[in-house]
Image (tube, rainbow over all chains, first blue to last red; front, side, top):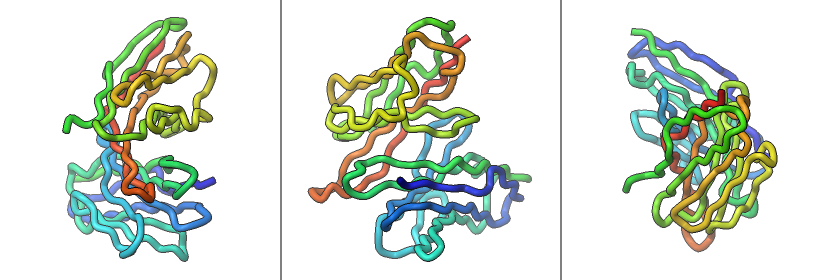
Amino acid sequence: AQSVTQPDIHITVSEGASLELRCNYSYGATPYLFWYVQSPGQGLQLLLKYFSGDTLVQGIKGFEAEFKRSQSSFNLRKPSVHWSDAAEYFCAVGARGAAGNKLTFGGGTRVLVKP
Amino acid sequence: DAGVIQSPRHEVTEMGQEVTLRCKPISGHDYLFWYRQTMMRGLELLIYFNNNVPIDDSGMPEDRFSAKMPNASFSTLKIQPSEPRDSAVYFCASSRVKGRQGLYNEQFFGPGTRLTVL
């Protein structure tokens, strides 16, 4: 069964600084990978996804993520953080094929942005 | 597109009462998922449907929980009787298989129902 680990529960970053959120997954084959963002009191919104091809994926709101098979990682980055990026971020892995369209989520990383 | 619609957005009830949460998926989506989010356990998949048929309900915590999908545009999650430990945010999500090969596609989430059981 697949699993996802987000090692950082909280991250505090200054506005304008760069941000990197870590995600490690466990899955026996090439996974489908996703990053979602959840603002307070809201549902989850997809930031970006990796299915195949180019391992550097561009998403919305200036985010990007890089799939590294050798490290089983899919880290999320943003070069310059805005105050509106304060939210909780979830990495998720999807199983291909017979397991259906099921996602497994990491525990989330809460990002605080200092002025 | 209106997105995934959930109702009610907030529900406060007393222990022992029946609670019904409702979800309308995005039109044309053939998968529907129910999740529960708590501080302690994070985001948990409770059950999911494909073409209105339950596929995996292994995440449903107890027999007090049940879910139905009578048609492609409506699903309910029922808790009977409710208990304080059921207090959580419940999300519904939907997705659509892409292409004849059944390629994966992302899930679209509703705004959630915040349930408080007193």
